[in-house]
Image 1 (tube, rainbow, N blue to C red):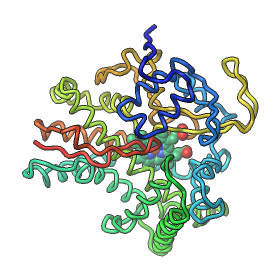
Image 2 (cartoon, rainbow, N blue to C red):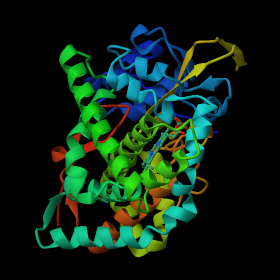
Image 3 (tube, rainbow, N blue to C red):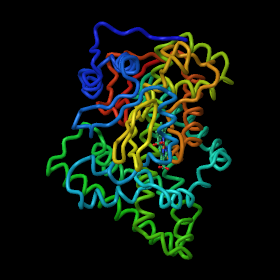
Image 4 (cartoon, rainbow, N blue to C red):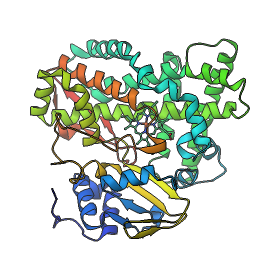
Length: 415
Ligand code: HEM
């Protein structure tokens, strides 16, 4: 079985490794090696770091799958409380109405209401529209010989698609962009919760909520073919679906639906630019794009952290996880586990059987996975085809400090 040896230049004590993983400067350029080190010395580790809630930390692919699928390990409002600040604030109240911070049966109910709109069959109908959009975006920049691939391209694709699905008119998206970035900044695991920051995140959530309330009111009188209209329709016969639930669901979809996919398109293209042989392979064989997308998702994912809580005592690999314990999955580590993926640090667009953890597994499996896959396939496929001589200077790339939403803020490219 493949293995990775212990690195002499990195700490070997598990909590010291974790401290370095959670430190922006400490993990710089070393994140994957730190993941390997932790998996090697303590694959199932009970951390003593108070700041992180003393979680169990899992880094192996198989353990991450076990955690995600265990009925006794759930997600709930504690995930929001962990962000810090006033537990009764408006921000916290809205966040706690989102399905990703809820256990069954309420989670199941909310998810059931919107599942169909994001099934593979439904989103496949969007493919021609996505294709047209990515080509238009490239046409608009082609003669310039340069662009910021995040802002000018990657960001525009999921933003347009999720707005259309929810029912936000595209010309109004700029209204919610500022609230959206504020909410994103608030879920950063390193964010310092000051009174000023709490004020800003409450303001952002109020702006967001008032906007979606006005959209609900408008669709109630004149429905269209969008998610808000469908939920308003469901509401007529369902006493358990309030306007506040529709608002929280819309905010969640807007947030989850654009930032992560933007990151993946940008990080995926960046990875290809750094692996010219793989890039050339994809250019020669565009039919590889679906498998390439899975490999890019595995190679460098956008959501690195996931926490579940135990609601019962359970034995696992001669440890006892007790009721109330937090269990943290490091997704990037599971995706590079040499027991699951041979030569895991190699980008291999032809790799077989890529069951990565980038969309999670189990009850909370990413609702937008089919949509995200389609957007990445179309966006990266078109870039590779249309701009064959694209170049990047890695020194100019601006990485986002967050580990939770691990993205690129600026990717200047030339051709
Ligand atoms: C490449 C892009 C994306 C990545 C990497 C990603 C990743 C994830 C991950 C890791 C989870 C949590 C799974 C868990 O905890 O087990 C999740 C949940 C979720 N994602 Fe995505 N996502 C992406 C795109 C999208 C899109 C486009 C949408 C919009 C429809 C979306 C909507 C959601 C929702 C609503 C949840 C919560 C599901 C639940 O709690 O049941 N995601 N996503």
